[in-house]
Length: 437
Image (cartoon, rainbow, N blue to C red; front, side, top):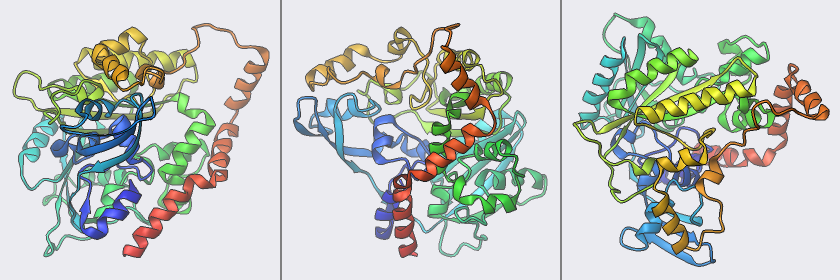
């Protein structure tokens, strides 16, 4: 996303929805969807894609948009490349501002947090809206507007090594209560868009705990190179520790959100949580898969709430890890929500196709000669060993070795650093942004 922003910003334009990690690509956002703090107004990223070019299963190159191969255009969104290979996308752009004026609004219960979000979402000047939940009675709603040229608000940055991590900066706003006025700051646009890159929301603090490094401003500055999402997530997967983390995004109806966060509190006791409102009523009423499939629900609510759950679990028992994810999936389904399929997915095949319109999906795969490609379920399902399945002596020895501290962590970091090509896009985009400045 950082390369896309670097290309459009010189023209005074940006995409209306920009995922917060710079390494997420346009193709990622379209094939697997994504939301951001602008999604209360612009919905999911894939709904900002106006046209695609796709190589279908029989090698034909097709353009698809509203009115032209419309079924392919709608169906390929959130389909994880199972209808063909998308090679070109036309993305909507909106006018960009140089700064975002961010206001931090502390609230002390879920009901008032949701009420505040609904009021702020209706305000025409609101451009960005999210909240961070630090406990059952501690929230900070973060609302962003385009900063006028005459704004006198102090400038706050988040992209440099000496800058604070965004969530820590937001957390400090809770300490200022009950003294008015509320904090308002001007944040450079790119700093705001990628505000969670350093520290990967808050998961980066776990690395300090793992390597027994003090979690202080000095060491965050010293180790800043390793604390960007491109390196962190590469290291996480290479180390194998991704199989001990709950990394899930659940999209829940507003009227069920309080019940859901109380369930998360009881099941995981993990904070912070990311709360991001998403406009439910989209422009694609015929869409039939994944998050794009949401139809307007009965009643006045038009918003869904994305709840981001990003936490390590203490248990290294894989059966326990699977059980926790399975229970979370069942709760989301019970409350009428949906989970993002980029994450660990443990649905059985029958459960998975209860969520989606299999008939319509298969018809599109047949029409566009994609039946020999993997299905969505085959692309996203996790391979789960049978409960109680015994490992061979070599597998057991290997597993015990990787549980020894700190071998897995060091291995993950070394693999991330050795894969220098993995960092090239970051260097290119950072160079482009510096040239603009």
